Length: 250
Length: 204
Image 1 (cartoon, each protein chain N blue to C red):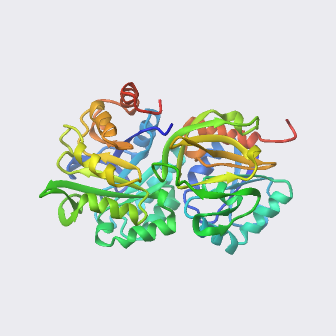
Image 2: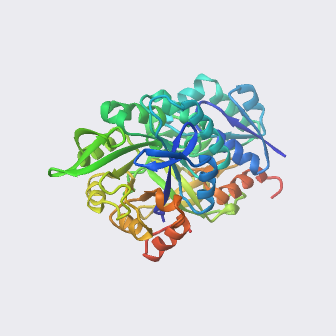
Image 3: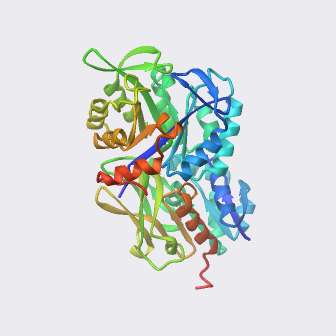
């Protein structure tokens, strides 16, 4: 049976692991490859690296870190952030990423999704989107949640899948960092309308929140601080997932 | 040390595969040189991306013929993910002819409720085969097409999706492969790579 997945997300900049509050007050937290390896040993089903560097800053260092990760981490690695053209996606895959994720650039130029899917295959193209509740639904924001786009999120999710996105990574801006649970309505709505795998993100405060996101229809749940702060481990979360009757890799 | 030749046709992440094979005890050559592929005793055909693009790249670099030559000369040929699909006669993806080393074709997984099939799933052995001895296992998948071998005996392992089994390990003679990524499947995947390295029809 296909397992539901638990995915730690690591912020990286210039090839280093960083932590901060909403991309501010960043501090260096070591080597993201070490962290990825630790999480793999602790039961992570996949790892996501979110490159939060501006423009081309630290791109070379990111590629070198991806190369090292590919040599040491034997579970899938998705890398997103700053992929604004197919060449960058290809560079990451050749360095050793298994999937890439696009966000702002796809909102600016939706055809980028078609191009990436055609050249690289849908299965390695993740479309990430940041959504906030607003008039009559959810609205999509670009540039790390800073810029309104006027794009309705459930519609954007459908379009992203139609264009060849192989997986959707949906972050609730309202819930992100709050540790009070995922936006379950958002997960449920997108699940009703798309057939590709859905990764829920934003708001995990504990294993119970992850279970709720998976019950709401997510195929996978992404979390950051609950793992980084040592509150729990992917293995512990998955035991809880299994105890609630959902398939988990234990 | 077992020598393995990994066919490099620009298929993406070969670094994990090289490391995985080395950890399993292989001496690995990653090459796009048709002569080296044709002369290899163990050939690994990796693959991500679409069948059409991959076959074009293999043909353009004269690697398609080299893989067929290696197989004809008695090499053990192993495909991973798209690499497994390419070993068959054709793929519905881009409607392209493939390497034709195994009878059957790759078809779209229209039966599944979720496509692509993405994540960890059970692989159950269906034959007494050196590769199937690394099973059962939970392995990592990322694909939208699956192979349908023309001969039932070529199904070495199966995985269920949407209540229906599909061939997740397939092969005949010295040609075989997995739909999942052993190099991304943690310790279970390492066992499978070891089984590939030990695979010999003489020892049996």
